[in-house]
Image (tube, rainbow, N blue to C red; front, side, top):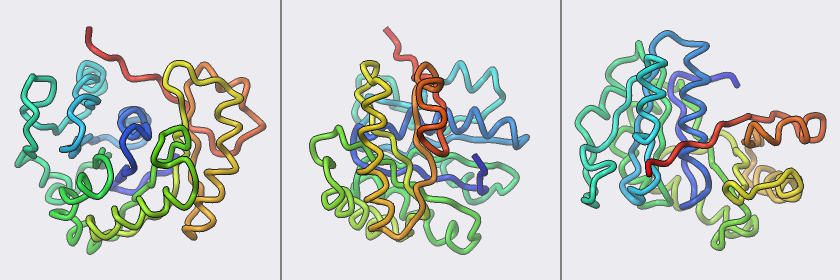
Length: 220
């Protein structure tokens, strides 16, 4: 993928944002010297970018996340470090914003500076296999709520439709009409379809702009 200086990933709970954010940061490191990944998800502390901290350390990627990530405390706290996203432009940043408009409120603290710099993409990550975003209409409502809360506009859609580790190639193919409908109705491009690396060979030539991913490891 081609990256702007700031890449924002937003969407409904369980859309696949965190896995995509992790893989984008690692991919971006091949294109930029200084990369950071920021976890602004104050809604769902279970799926955390911090679970991949070992991979980030090996790659030389800076991680910004809540001090309460991967603890038993569910506290909606954001680190002061998050302002590095806008204050230090020597970094390329990937930001896992969090679920729905509640998570996007955190992004609102940075939105004016991001908009003024005008070197960002904000992707709506969609998943037709989640109960509250099974069709384009419900997904577009989520889009509207996030844009209002964050005070930023989406620039593209990423199809993250998945059934976790049980996802098969036919599940991804079956999601494509939905993803295209969302993008067309929103008036923004379908920028990528994120798929597990193991499915790549089955889907090559059938879907454009595939973004292969390794699934994030979960601590035991």
